Amino acid sequence: MKKKLDGINVLYPTPTTIVGAMVDGKPNFLTIAHIGIVNHAQPYLISVSLGKVHYTNAGIKENKAFSVNIPSEDLVVETDYVGIVSGKKTDKSGVFEIFYGELGNAPMIKSCPLNMECRLYDTYDTPTHDLFIGEIVETYADDSVLAEGKVDIKKVKPLLFDMGSIKYWSLGDVVANCWRIGKKLKKK
Amino acid sequence: MKKKLDGINVLYPTPTTIVGAMVDGKPNFLTIAHIGIVNHAQPYLISVSLGKVHYTNAGIKENKAFSVNIPSEDLVVETDYVGIVSGKKTDKSGVFEIFYGELGNAPMIKSCPLNMECRLYDTYDTPTHDLFIGEIVETYADDSVLAEGKVDIKKVKPLLFDMGSIKYWSLGDVVANCWRIGKKLKKK
Image (cartoon, rainbow over all chains, first blue to last red; front, top):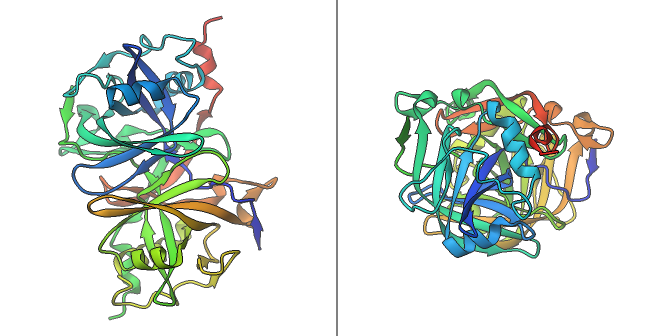
C-alpha cells in the first residue's frame, strides 16, 4: 500500500558538506547537505542550496567563489556546530585551520579529507533559496583517503544527512558493482 | 598532505534514483544518481542531471513531467539494468509494475518504496547535460518504510552511488543527531 506524503522531498541521504566563503573579508563556514550534481563533464558543476536568510550568500555573490568541503565522521561536532550558529552573530573563522587554493578567496578546511574549490558559475534563483552553482576549479584530497590515486570513499567516512530522521548516518558496505550487476537481465 | 585531483567532482555518495517518463507514448526508466536538492520549501524542487544523449530527455520536455523513484537494495539488479540499457534500443516499459498519480503522465514504479511525482519546473541547460528541475506534486511511500507516518530511511535501504569506486553502497548506522551534537561547542 502506498501512502501520500503531501509532496515532501524524500531524496536522502545526501553527503553533508561545509561550504566556505569570504564574508565581509573574513572566512565563514556553513553546513549544507542540500547539494546537487549538475553535470558530469569538465568543468564539473555542482550546486549548494542556501536559504536566502543565510549570512554567507552575500559573500558568495560578492567574491564569486566558495568551497565545498567534505567532513569525516570524526568532525561531526564541528560540522554540526557551524550549521547551527549563524555567521551574523558568531565569528566562525577560527573553528577550522584554513588553506587557500588557486582562486585565493575560497577558504578551505584542512581537516576535511576532501575539498572542492569553486568559482561561482551561476546563481539559480528560487523564491526562498539561492542555488549556487560552482565550477570546480581544483579538488584537494588528503593522502589518507586515497588508494592508487583515487578517492576511497570508505576511508572518507562521509556524514550522510537525512531530513526524515534529522540525523547524520555513516556509509555502510558495498552492495554491488555499478554498470555490471544489471547485465544479468540483458537478453542474449 | 593534500593532493590535487584535477578538479574532479567528489560529491558522493548520492542516492541512486530511477527516473520515469513517457517517451514516444511509452513509459521509460533510467537510473540517475546525479541528483540535487534545489530548495527546502513547498513546493519542493529537486533536480536530475541527464546527459543530452539520453533517450528520456525529449520525453520529459514534451510531457513536462517525470518521476523520481527510490529503489531499495533488493532492486539493485533491475536498477542497474535500466541504467545500462538505452530506451533507444530496448523497450523498458515492462521491467517494473507501474502506477500513475495526479499528473497522469509521470510513470512510477510500484516496487520502489518511495516515489516523487514531478511537474517539470524548469530545465537548466549546460553544454553536455540537461538539468531537469522538478516540482514535487506528490510523494508516495510504501507502508513498510514508514514509522509513525514518517519515512524511516533505514527501512528504505537506499542504494548509495559512488563514482570513485563505481559501486552501490548501503546506508550504515546513525553517527549523531543533527542540529544537536554541535551545541557542545557553543559558548555559554
